[in-house]
Image 1 (tube, rainbow, N blue to C red):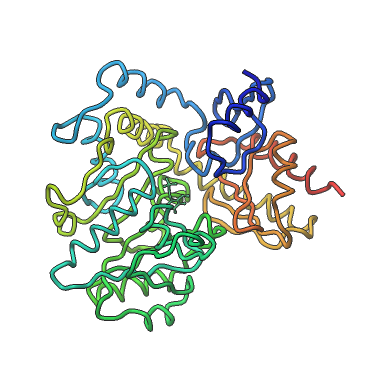
Image 2: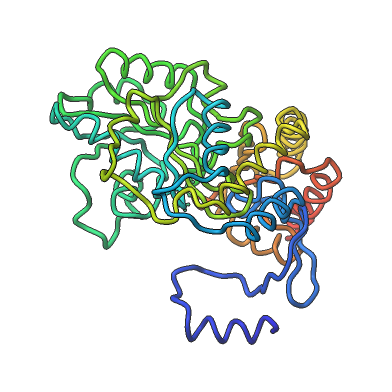
Length: 393
Ligand SMILES: Cc1ncc(COP(=O)(O)O)c(C=O)c1O
């Protein structure tokens, strides 16, 4: 099929809730993706940070192929090796908790919200505080947690029990906590909100408040987790630990999966019957997840992220000197935002036309999130395309 033919099918049969580029993608390998007409694109966005090891990393492909031939589905009333091994990796690389598996970031956050409530159900505490420009998902609970009115429009009434506070404003947070508050939930590095990094004082302050007032700290690492910032999890840059953490996107290296991990004494509140997911922790997705962890370890990718992230940020800051349209470059590891002083939609459209996948969020912030194993020559190639687009009158 060509792009025109598939577009006609979509127009007739697929709900138009996305703005799609008129490109039919057919295959990917590493940082490269091709369309049906044979045009190659350089993918420095990784599909919202999902393709952590690039497209179709051989280790992930082999793990999926092997598992697909052995056992694809098993209900959660039995044990499977991939689920156990993935839980072990997540726990050992983070804070030693226990995992619940699901299929997406929204579901992982939904599980975290439910856990925070059920864990506090005897005390009657149920309120959760989240932060401006956050993004936690599209289910009714997680869209309520998402403190951005544009995502709420048309979905009232939202879920009761959420309050919003400006990001990085500890004093404002202190004023909103009350005797019904059970948890504080945030992304240590906001993704969709424009690559906003929590300050050390803010995250330390939140941890201290949680300890003093008996609140749960939920960190949403759906976008910033899994090595993207140069450590497995973004909170590890701060020398604190959350009580609950959520993951998805990159966890399966391209396969749908979500996970919530919680300290054991909190996790035990999710007793049998309280929460579940038919496909959660399925052997296929978990085998892919195990292959992702193994590859990060074997290829020493966290060190590479630090180096190539530093190089990318330096190069982008150099561009800022020449191109006045760039207001700020900020980021951590390979999670980098290029803030423009204009709307970035046209620039992204032109980049895609020129063969470079990037994304613009929050109207003005270009998101640069290549795979962790990206090479310097890919960064240089991408920056050259980006420069040519910026140079257009
Ligand atoms: C930080 C964060 N949390 C949650 C989500 C929701 O994830 P999903 O789209 O897999 O439900 C996203 C998606 O962009 C995200 O960036």
